Image (cartoon, rainbow, N blue to C red; front, top):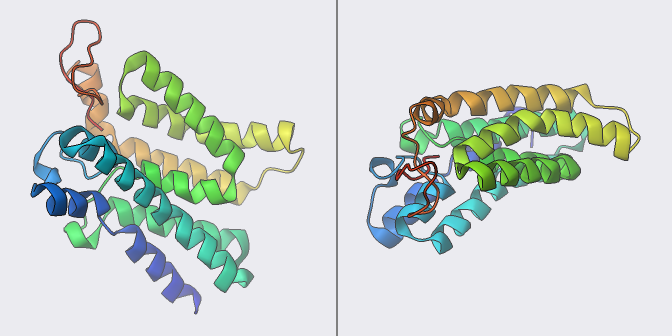
Length: 216
């Protein structure tokens, strides 16, 4: 399989809108018109149940893992740069799905899947950052933003201090690029956080007297 075909495969596989399809199939609702109007796991879990939300989360992570792993197996001559390209294609597919008129999700879970294959330690660090921010502020969106910002930093420090290896500037540059994209997809969330109108992840959670839930 040549490079362009595999890159296209990565984009198409990343563009599969599991959240939209699962909500439509099992609840008969268009997830794009409810809650935060996002097709990601948080909105699915909030609206139709967390068992569905976790399924969507797992599938969206797999969308990032699969192209990176398969590219290393079937196009080994491409090396790390091509694996990263396939990962970027998968994330862009999720953000701009042709199945949804080139609109899509935030790309957080798919990005996690990409780097879970390539830099698992950095991903664990990003998860820790996400969890701490979420536990304190109760906003999944804010946790996702902080995790994406810190992912390149965690990768650099863990590679140097824990693994005693050289930092791959291919990996670091790709992390920065995708993190910037994730921040852009959260721009409306940032505005809502500043306006104190962001939705909480779990119904009934309250913070500082707000009764809104988290919007991802």
